[in-house]
Image 1 (cartoon, rainbow, N blue to C red):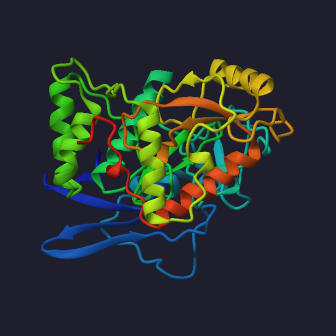
Image 2: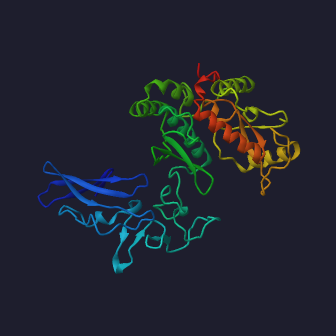
Image 3: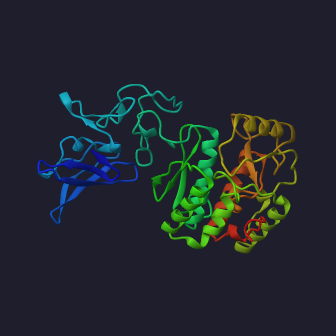
Length: 370
């Protein structure tokens, strides 16, 4: 039977052997080992080509302590079916053949840019798909789940000393799945949504997680940012901040790290008109939000340059967080404005440059980080 780090095998004597499995960031089982009377016993080693075909010609020795059933689980942590020489992986929904890097039946989840037999969006270094259906946050079932997931991602980033989970510069990184949701990784490992039964459990877990990540000095900021005092559940703090004041601070901090920085896109622009409230820093928007931003953009233009042409073949304007999410602390009040493709790209370059030069979001006072 299995345990969280491998499996347990009962011996005929009535005692138990505990086998441990080392897995890489995609859940591929790379090494199985156990303690054999005080000495390390390497049971089996697996090395894979990117799409899962196992290397052959070396590391073929299998320990006498190996379990024939447990040995079947390899790539993506899934069982390899070798009966009749098929040599494919029995995913939950369908079978995957590593020899051709394709599934044997169509994908139940539609991918408009890929074949229905395609595996891992042709990027097995970043994506795993143990279900055979879709890669993502296993516990995120509702829009509220995703919002809580993004909030937890930002708090994790803060605990490890990163300033955002979405800038790609630190230990916490993110990538979009095929549905446009941001999947968050800590040190290359995909993170799942953590659900708490009550507020006390949430605070206790946050403190213990922070200490494990070795950033206790940041815990006060994390807790004040995530939990309402006396609340019944973990929630993202809602802070009423003066956007203009925060925007001025953003520009000042940008000029501190780069006196020549172009800050045009870092504040609501000269052509600013209507806007809508931002629910969070998340880059995942509802259909209603996108529709409203497109209506504002078509009627009033890009808030930075004023053009009513989005610059995209789809005609969609980018919902632009102001102040920019990567330049302000969690909990900062933000609004969404329409951005054309050119101004959006310009803002991305400016923000990336500032972050590399040492921009510090904790120099921004939004009445939360005092």
